[in-house]
Length: 170
Image (cartoon, rainbow, N blue to C red; front, side, top):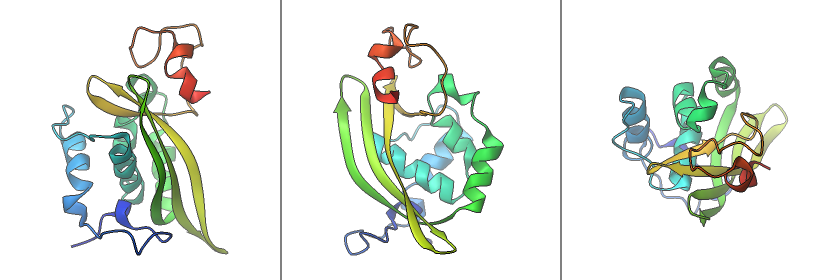
């Protein structure tokens, strides 16, 4: 039974409890990829972050797209996502910090995604922002600009973008 990629951490291996993929991220992947209603959803932004990391490792670009804010999904390049996932030799994930409640609907997860390069291991260190829309967490992709600061927010909150998700996409 393979371990879940999100539970492998070269930096904190002595702290991590090994969990099988089927008991960790697989139910989230299967639920969303097999049924758009996603009966099994990430309870927290950290849980979504972990499942997205596992989707990169296991080359599930459709999951990456479907867990990004709906207003940004059509602007993502699924072929590029898949290519990057295939070409990266992932070696582990470390959650540095999780801020589960920023305002009414936002959260942030700071993480390091480790990968191997010819000259050794390195890490992609990021502070990711998430928004909860209708009881479901989504990733806010800072590389995809969809609206101006004065327009209604892409998450559908009814607030102006600059006062809602724009605060976290800076």
